[in-house]
Each structure stands twice: as C-alpha cells, then as structure tokens.
Length: 237
Image (tube, rainbow, N blue to C red; front, side, top):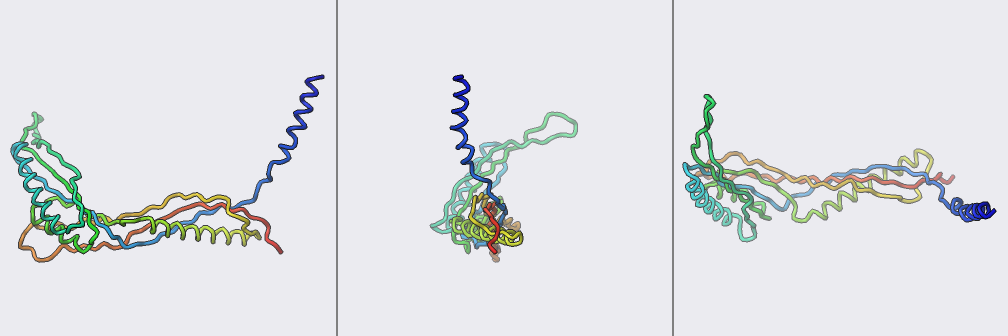
C-alpha cells in the first residue's frame, strides 16, 4: 500500500515538470563569410650570414665578425625605431660522401647566424636589404608584411560576415513564408590574417651597386567565417 502511495505521489510531483518543457522552436542556420583588405604597416626581414671554414673555430669567428658588420649596417639603415634580434644560430660539420661506400670525410664546418629586423617604416625595407648585403649578408630568407594592430581589421571582417549571414537568413525566411524572431546563437569559425611573404630577388653584395632593391608590400587579406542560427515563425498576413 505504501509503495503504491509513493508512486502516486511521485507521479503527481513529476507531472508538472514534464508539462513545463518548452516546445521546440523552428530555426534556420546559415553561414557567413567576408574578406577585407588592409595596407600593412609593419615589415619583418629575415637575413643572416653563412660562412664556411676548415675548422669550427674559424667558421664561428668568421661568422661572428661578418654578422656583427651586417647587424650594424642594417640597424643604421632601419633607423632608431627598428628592432633587431637573433633568431637562429648553427654550427655544423660538412662531410664529403664517397661513391665507394667508405666512411665520409670531414672537410670543414658551416656556421649560419640569422636575425630578424622589424620596422614600421616600410619605405626603408629595400635600403635595409641593400645595406645588409653590402655588409656581408648572404642569407635573405624573405620579408613578411603584417599589421601592428590587427584588432580593427578583424572586427571589420567579423562585422561584414555577420551582416552577410543575417541577410542570407532573411532571404531564406522570406522565401519560406517565415519571419525572424530572434538570434539564437552565433558561432565564430575564425578570423585569419594572411601575412604577405616576399622573396627578394638575388642580389650581388657589391658596394658599387646603384639601384635599390624594389619591394612592394601590396595588401593583406583578413578572412572571417561564422555560423548564425535564428528562430523563425510564420510571417504575419
């Protein structure tokens, strides 16, 4: 008898809970994407020195002397606002391999020292490369153009992606005889800023060279993607 009464009470208590469950809403889910462009205002130049010598000490010493001259020249060309820092250094043995299959022969060492020059005056990029190569830089890995502050460009791309998603949802709703009631959710898939990489043409490190290295920054692409879910209801007649 007690068990029957307990079950009855539980049924009475649970019944309102089931009755209060909200009815499922009708919704439309769409995606929106946008791409905006911006002029870069920062450049990063990766340059350095590679030296070879019979001994590791000689390779390292020659590299240090030449690399110091390169940094001095690059710093002078870039101006006081530039930042220079060493990014990598290696000292490796060189081996000559024989077709006979015998043990390879050690025939010297290679030292490589790389630095990154970061500057915000893009008009000086060519001058920095020229000064560095004239001072002995024989490794110019490339130039990367970026933005000092990406937030404004990211916000603009997101805003345009959201507008496109909303417009797409409104078109679908109208075509189906519906109206948008409210936004249920927004999911950002990502905002990507694509830097510009430039591989400068090979240059002769000659002090008599007269023409400056031409460098054109171009424009950056900022891409945004998001998904929008809206609640819809029958349109009023």
